[in-house]
Each structure stands twice: as structure tokens, then as C-alpha cells.
Image (tube, rainbow over all chains, first blue to last red):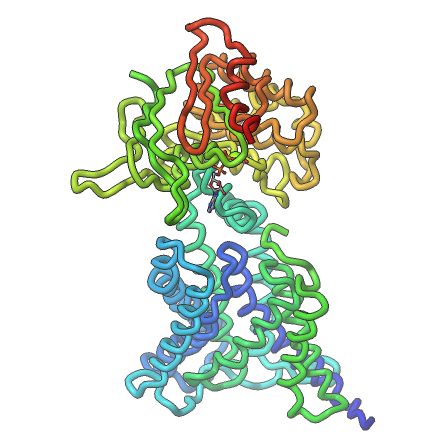
Length: 311
Length: 250
Ligand SMILES: Nc1ncnc2c1ncn2[C@@H]1O[C@H](COP(=O)(O)OP(=O)(O)OP(=O)(O)O)[C@@H](O)[C@H]1O
Ligand SMILES: [Mg+2]
């Protein structure tokens, strides 16, 4: 085999960066699965909405094209994270209200939820493909942030965008992990994910808990969408599709329903698909990533860390 | 006025009817017991009382307030479990249903969910629950899933008490417990009752008659036998015959 070891550093870094994106999106799949035992297949669209929202904010309304620096840049990034996070969280909560809650109220079968999820995903994605929204073309994004490398790690250059994504993801996961372990809302989320009916018997407001999980997953997905668009400098209606599927794979790989599993699964998948291209062509990236999904489902369906939000 | 008045209650699953018109009263401050064979509909009954299953007919009245029944247009309405917990109806479900990945302490705190602001009150209820079941204190930080079956049952009852019930429904607490532990659980149920909570026990173990003030026997979704202690001591033979009668015929 002909391995291109010179690219190792680059691929490792890219793997970690992409893995962070997968992890952030996977969190949304995992939390909703935890409480509802439902794969929210519309979550890729929620991620895309985060990117689209930041495109509207910075590219259309503010129309920023010159690199900002210092506090100005920090302010813009905070604003972008907040705006994209809230836009996606709002969309996720609306999705739950419109696509899932009516089914739940009727005690519908699992398949109905799945069909509703897939339908919602297509609906949102193709809505954004319309000309009055993003249209079919790609938009350049993120001119307000310099792309100059800031540091070099293992021979790979890291610019601010990539650093933001990596450290942002770490901070978000640490925060969430503390949140579900120490707060009342966090405890109720774990309770509902362990036994929804028992939680109802305790008087827990299950609808609110479910809404909270969609909200949190939406915030993570939306912020990931913004940071992803910054790193790849583009926004398009279909940008959620592949990362969404990869993130779903990552969630299963780490153990669906498991928050730490989402983080681990994301990183592992990012590393596996990128490092595998050391020795085989880059065109194999996607087949390899999805083979991981199939292999996990066959040999360790509960994933590396096992299922369950409460863990 | 009785604490709980159930009139012509009908409930089931989808098209399958289980309860075929139940009418019973439970008085405030008593320990009522519902006996019946497997599949009689006992769990269906307490699930309906706790708001987890919507009845298809009849009414349930708690302290004079209708908590399930037809509205003005004749459509069946039932309060959801959250409202009922707030009104003091709490179910300790069949099969314990503790949260296995949460610790004993966390399980109890989830039980006190509806008293978010009242930390002092919650601390008192925790103290009391631990007094009923001292074993829980020793297991405080252990994951509930790793408790023994008996300990899980203690935790389930204690967790139910966290919601400060007026009416505590306990579904087959004795299931899978040793005779000695069953006795302990019955004794604690009696103490909970004496401390001011109305207790409704679903059981298959006739030993529960020792602590009962009133007994109902259910067969195929209807009440076939009722007796109150005020009418004289329970005759275990008579009650057992009522609820085992059908089995002996088979
Ligand atoms: N979720 C359900 N869907 C359909 N049928 C059900 C469901 N739960 C219970 N049943 C049926 O309702 C009937 C009454 O069940 P229920 O659980 O109320 O009995 P039970 O008296 O509690 O019995 P046990 O002592 O075995 O717990 C049974 O025939 C059972 O098969
Ligand atoms: Mg039962």
C-alpha cells in the first residue's frame, strides 16, 4: 500500500475539526433519541438553518466583507453564535410542536414519527432551496473574519475559524455535561430519558422536558452550522445533508442517547474518515464513514459508550 | 364525602375494554386494598386513577372535584398526571420503575419534582422517607439500578412519598419480595397511612388484609366483593375464596 505519511498532521487536524462538527450535530440526535427514542431525521435541516441564519445576519443584513479584529471580532462571533443557535433552537422547537407532538398526543406508532421526521427534513431543506431563501447556488460566507493561520500544529495551519470550532465544541460539551448532571432541568431530562412514564408519575412536565431537549439540540446544531460555514466559507441549502448523516453515524458510534458518546463518536468518525485517506484515495471518505455505521450496527449496536442519556 | 369516588368507571386499551364499570369509594385516612388475579385489571385501574390512562366512561371524583369524566358536551376528559400529582394522587407503579442510572438521592429528588421551591419541606420529607426505610440512607449514592429488588421497592415507595401524596396508590409492592420483606413493606404502608396519607394497595398477597380497612376484589374488570373492617374482621378464607374462586374452577 502506498501511504502518504506527509499528510498525517493535516489529516489529523482536519479529522478533529470535522469531528467536532459531527459531535455538535450528533448531540441533537442523541438528546432527542434519549427522551423520545426517535431519530429526528430533520436535524440536518436544523443544522443548515444555523448556517443560513448567520448568512442572513452577516452576509445580507450587515453585509460585512472586511475582516474585523480584536473586540469587534469577538462581538461579531458571539452575536453569530447566539443568533444561529437561537434560530435553530426556535426551528427545532417548532418542528417538535408541529411534526411530533400531535403524533405523540395521538399515541401514534413509531413509523409515523419516522415518516414525519423525514418529511420535515425534506420540507425544510427544499424550502431553503427556493429562490426567496437561499436558492440553489452556494453563497460565500465569513468575510468578516481573517483566514490567516494563527498557529501550526503538526505541520497543519490553524486559522481562527478552526480554532473557534474546536474550542467552542469543547466548551459547549463541558457546559452541557455539567448542566444535565447538576441542574433540576438536567435531572428531569435524564429521568425522562430513562423512563418517560415514571417521570410523568412524578409530576414531571414531560412536554417541557422534550421541548428543552429539542432546544438544546437546536442550539448546538445552529452554532455548529455557523462555525461550519465559517470554516468552509460557504453556505448552501444542502449543506446539512452529508454532515447530518455523518453526525447520525457518530451518534450511533458513540452510543445513541449518550451525550459523552456523541462527543466521542464525532471525534472518532472525523479521525477515521480522514486518517483512512492516508493510504487510500480521498474519494473513499464517505463510503468509509458509512461503513462504520453499518459495522457498528452489526457488531456493537449500543455504540462505544452504550445507550442512555443518563450515563 | 369520600376522598375518592369512582362511578361506573370504564377503561381499556384501544378497542380492548378492561374495566367494565367500576363503582367504589375510598374514605379519607383509610387503607384500602384491591385484590385480584393476574389480568383482572388492577393495574389498569390504578393507571386510570393516576391519569396515565384515559377512561372511556364514568367519573372519578377526588375530594369533591371531578378529575375524570365527561365534560358538558359529553366528551371524556381526564386530568393529566402532573395535575393529579399536584392534587396529591401519586402512584408507585408496578415493577418499581426506579430510574436505574440515577442514584438513590437523585431518584428521591425527582420524586419531589413538584416542590421545586420548597427545599426545606423536601428535606423534611426525605428525612421521613429515610426513617421509613433506613436502608436507603446506606445506599444514598448508589445507582438505583444496582439496588436489590427489595431495596428498589423501598426506593419506589419513598420516591412516591416525596410528592407528599394525599392518596398513595401502590401497585403490587410485594411482587418478588421475600415474605419477611413483604411484611416490612406492608408495615411501612400502614405507618404511612397512620401518618396521614390515604393508601390504596393493589395486591395478590392476601397477607395485606392485616393492614386493610377496606377490601375490594376484582375479577375480569368488575368488583365482585367489597368489605369494610367496620363490618367485622376480615375472614381471609372468605376473601380468598372470592378472588381465588375463579382460579379453582379452572
Ligand atoms: N398496554 C396494554 N395494551 C393492551 N392490553 C393490555 C395492556 N395492559 C394490560 N392489558 C390487558 O388488560 C388486562 C388487565 O391487565 P392489568 O395489567 O390491569 O391486570 P392486573 O390485574 O394488574 O394483573 P397483574 O396482577 O398480572 O398485574 C389484561 O388482559 C392485559 O392483557
Ligand atoms: Mg398489575
